[in-house]
Image (tube, rainbow, N blue to C red):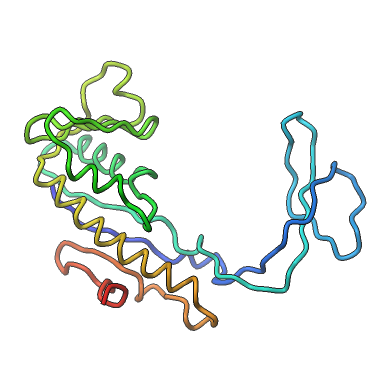
Length: 209
């Protein structure tokens, strides 16, 4: 098994900037709004009563981090396509995407010793058995089923190493996003960090120096 690609893309349907709103008040649905007040959305509170959450625009704009979607790992493997998909599902789980500022879980996974395991609840389960990491997706490990994938330890650590480098570049990019003042300073598609097996990393040098 090898890592073919790590990528995430600008979502063009989302604005690069959004108008910032200051939370104002929670009120029962149907309450008249004050002048200048703007309704944000409806929801039900814990008692099941329909409420409104209102806000006032501050006039400030902030970048929209949702415009830069979550990244995905694409794997290539010899053998079962089902096992490859299971490994991809596990390695693309939200917890393994990690907080780019502190990807400690990924580092711990790269240091598993034989017999060690990691449980990501509904997102999967992995156990190191000698020089192989056995992977179950979803809750299948708790239903007594066999593992869906077996990943050689060397491949496992290499995938995690490359993903950690990508996350470091992404964290640097997100730090930049926190300081941008103009539309043209927002990273475009060609500025985003990317990994591809045939060319290696692209854009990472910009963010990591």
